[in-house]
Image (cartoon, rainbow over all chains, first blue to last red; front, top):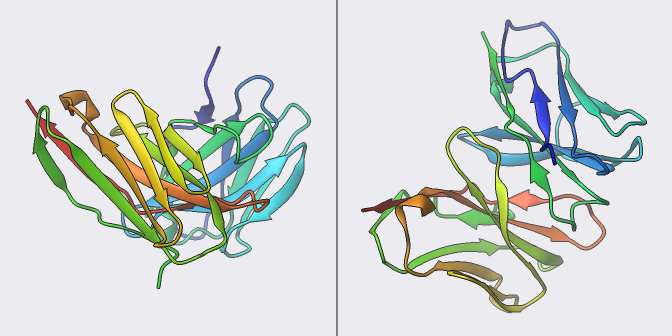
Length: 113
Length: 111
C-alpha cells in the first residue's frame, strides 16, 4: 500500500511570493491534516480536512489556506511569504480523523529567502 | 504557559538502558495521548496511543498517562541504536480533530 506522498519535497521561494504544496493521502483515507514544523515552535497544527470540508483550523494567519478535492488529495497555499514561513510542512492522512492512526508524509521543506 | 511541555534534551544513553521520556500539559480537557517517533528527514510515525488515564504496553514500549498530575511518560526498555530518533508527545481534546504536540526529545542510543 503506497504511503502518503507530498510534492514537491524541497522548495525555495523569495519573500512576497506564494506557494502551493500538495499531499496525496493513503488510498481510502478521507481525513488530511497539515502541520508546520520548525526548530523553535515544533510541530504545529494548521488545519484538517474531511470529505472536502475544513473541520478545524490552527492559530495561523489567513495567508495560510488549504483545500481538499473529491479524491481526498489536498493542497495548502501560503500567500505573501515571509522569512518565518521557512519550515517543514507535513501532511498526515487517516480514515476518519485525528483519533484514528495518522500516517505522515515525508514533508515539504520550504525555504523563504 | 504552553499547553504541552516537553524537555528537548538531547538525551544520550548506552545500548540496553531504560529510557524515560515525559511531557506535562495544562489543558485538563485532553483525553487522547500519543507518542510519535521521528527519524531524521522523515515524517513522524505513531508509536503509542492511549485514551484517558492508565498504562499501555507494546513490546519494549510502555506509555503511561496520569491525568491527575497532567503528566504522560514513554518508557523504552532494552534500548537499541535503532531507537535513536526524536520522540514527540501529542494530545487532543475529544471531538476537536486538533492535535497539540510537544517540541520533541532527541534521543541517541550509543552502541
